[in-house]
Amino acid sequence: MSAIEIVNVLSRGVTVTVSLLLAAGLLSYLVAFIAGLSRVSRFRAVRVLTTIYVEFFRGTSLLVQLFWIFFVLPQLFGIRLDPFTAGVVTLGLNYGAYASEIVRSSILAVPEGQTEAAIALNMSRFQRMRSVILPQALRTMLPGFGNISIELLKGTSLVSLITLQDMMYLAQNLRASDYSISLQVFGILLLMYFALALPLIVLSRYLERRASRGVADA
Figure (cartoon, rainbow, N blue to C red):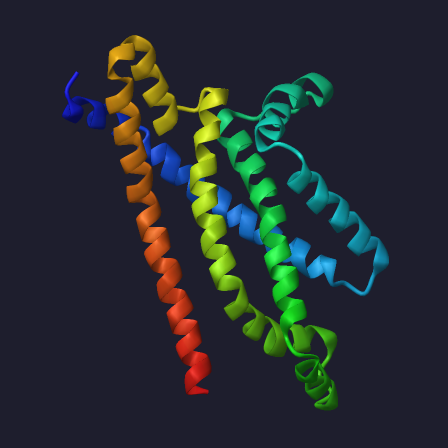
């Protein structure tokens, strides 16, 4: 099989991989902000429950989580998710847990003087968070979010193990059909993942420069 034929086969999985990346990315960042803000909540119960979620998903295997959500949930609770949804949920919850630590630490990194000044202006807790703390913390979050996005792209390859036909799944099928082309298949797959990651790298660096320029101009 020629390299062009291999590329054509693997290209069929690009749409699945990119769709999974976008959907899981949206979920993970939504979870990250909810969990990150909850970690700095004034309510102890909220902080404790969020900490349990974060440490559980950070401390257990992503692959096991994927299998548990796809294979075990139907047996225990009758909750059946299609492979794509199971992949989105698992990746979103897992990487959301990691990203929530970025949100939490970035919020805590904002100087206390900023909060004290907002209190002096008679701002409510919500107003302080929305107008003073989060805009400054977001600049600190950007490098970490860029790394999480790239890690998430690489993590999407695991969904091939629950029969979702992404690039990795198609690559494994090609390899199974002819072991002699393993080098070509996985070499091309490596380049394809890098091609998908490159725009994320460029966008991340652009946003970081833009945010830093804004600080310098201020």
